[in-house]
Structures are given as C-alpha cells and as structure tokens.
Image (cartoon, rainbow, N blue to C red):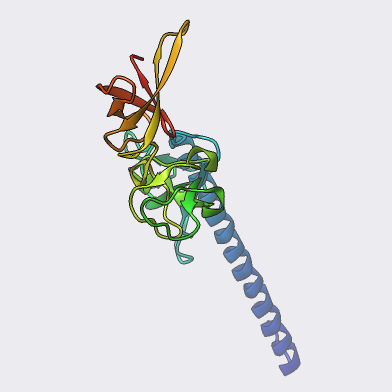
Length: 243
C-alpha cells in the first residue's frame, strides 16, 4: 500500500522534521554548556583546596583570585555520574600557575589545563614623586593593591608605619614604600639612645653614624660621653642599647 502526500503535506512534514532536529541540536548544545560549567566549577573548587593562604607581615586584606580560562566550546566533555577527578603535582600551594589534569572514571577522556593564581594585597605607595631626604607626611602616601607574589622586599601596610621617616632613594608616584627606600634613622641625625632593663630605663642623646631601618643595628655616638656604640633601631629617631 502506497501513501501519497500532497505538496502541502510534504512541506508540513519537512518543517516538522527541521524543527525537531533544531530542538535536538539546541538541547545538545545546552548539555555541552552544562558539562563545561560543571567542569569549570569543580576545577575551581579543586584548585582552591590546594593553595594555602599567603604568609606576609600582614595577612589581613590578602585577596586570592583563581582564573581558569574557559574551555574550547568545541571540546566534547563526557557526562560523569558523580564528579570529575583532578590531580596535580605534589605541592602547588604557593605556585602562581597550577597545571591540573582532569579525568572521568570509566572513560579514557582526560584534559590538562592551567589555573592562574594571583594574590594581591593593599600596601602603602608613594602618592607623588618623592626626592631623597624628604620627610614623609601622610598626604604624600596612598594605598594600592599589588601582586605580592612578585615582591621580594619588605613592604608597609599602614601609613602610620612610615610617616616621619626619611626618603633614602627617589620614589616614583605609585611606587611601593619598602624598607630599602627609607631610613628610620639617617646618618647625621640626632637620635634618642635608650638603655637599661625593664626596671630602669635610661635615655640620652646621640648622633647616628649610619643609616638604619627598623631592626637594624647601627653605630651611634653618645653625645654625653663621646663614645661610639652599637645600637638597634627601634623607631623613628630612636635606638636601644643592650636589648
């Protein structure tokens, strides 16, 4: 038995089939998108579990950002019954670029990708260009976020920590204020020399024979005795002997 369709019926059938396959195609794309999103989400969680908080002189305000580039839209990702599995090198806790392998149980499929980990923190920077021998005031300072992983110098995190210090080397606008840029005691400065114990604290005046930042031990001259002694810098214009 043969069935003959009219021209109109044929057009309707073709239209229906075209719409049906279009729906299937859209659903396939949506499923692919969902799997991509699942992989991205689980990859982010895995990397976040592997990295450790950055240890700095001030850990407050450290922001960690994990960036995983979107996977190629043409990539066919298998549907995993539970979740994807991830593995990486033994210790990636402090790496900036983390290479990760993703797999799916029961499938030969695997994928390598790189997660970029950036840690930034608010630090003190020069608001303007500052010349050597400038005494730093609050209006000359600003805050800025920097990638602290790339820094190997001693930074300052609060303005009050550097106000009153003297610029040792020229600073550009926006340049981080580091210990090497400053002297809390500069050569030729008058200083307060403290000595003694917790029970008895003696203060006298002196002159610095060397530049020094916080914690440095420098040579100073005792103004009263004229003797040259070694003392540790404890603050702006202050040193301590025997402690």
